[in-house]
Image (cartoon, rainbow, N blue to C red):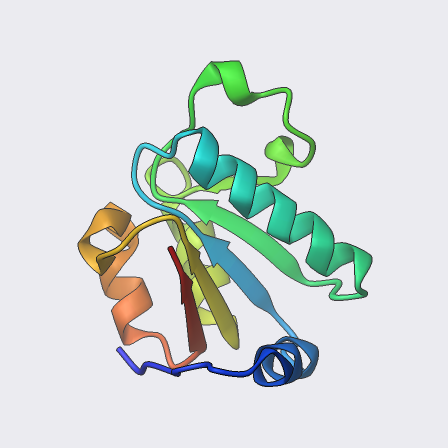
Length: 123
């Protein structure tokens, strides 16, 4: 996995602004932190004008979180793997949220590792 070490807010801003297709990915069995941070970032990016932003989770999130705005747009990897695969493979930026090691992404791990997209990892 290519790593981009970001030490300046302007660099992060520049990478996001130049990205055409952004995918936000959380960990397997996402909890409130994972789903909440993913959907909050999705909303911020959409509000900034990034029109092609998607959220992918390796597995479904708990039913008690269905009230979260944007939750109906989440792509669940182990439910619709081909859609998740196409989304990740066509992205030029992957934002990985709420996990420390890539193996926490379950069925998406190899897709993320093999992606040529820039990766921003936020834990």
